Length: 252
Picture 1 (cartoon, rainbow, N blue to C red):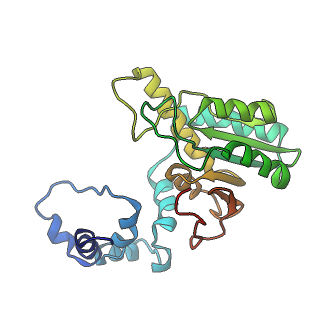
Picture 2 (cartoon, rainbow, N blue to C red):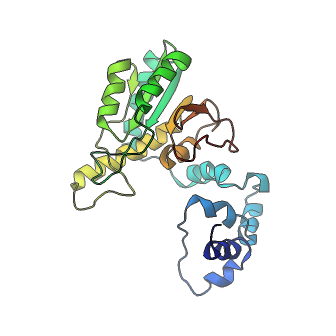
Picture 3 (tube, rainbow, N blue to C red):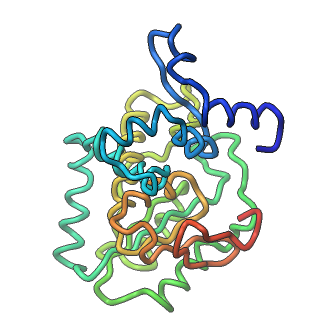
């Protein structure tokens, strides 16, 4: 941790008596960034829980536990399934070799007023297309696209053809930063439905190319093998083979 407060907090949550801390409260919930999750999981309180559900210490990282807990706690609703099933059916009927997924986040989204342009991603769309066409594309591979830009999704459809491209219909919203007073309730409903369906589908890809983004990073952890055919865009496209991978640039 970079400051005294962060260091003290890390010490408390990793080794403190959480039962004593929580005794005065009726309801407890955690909200934090990814930096503290692995630290919290080292606490003896959680070690006891892990032993009771037969999870080994080597498996008790956020990367390992997330897909397990996600599948345990959440099941897709009928509305989400209705979005996903036609995509899987289309892929299996026409392009049953594999599914290549793209998540492209460029910033400056029209769906998010005040959204900033993300540096070093001016050529991300063409870079990903060139990479697929040169290294990955097979005649019977489906291409799934999700993005913060309708224009990017349309460009992918135009390049590969509607018969080959898979995408979830619906308005683009950002679930952590949407402006509540702007979209209608109907837009919010269909936007959230698209986000959830996109998240699920990204976990089913044979190959995943993604921008550096928490959304597709966590979605990708649902894949049967998270690091199988995983590529990350960071001023170029790099294959990520394990969690020790270090990006070549501080800002991607």
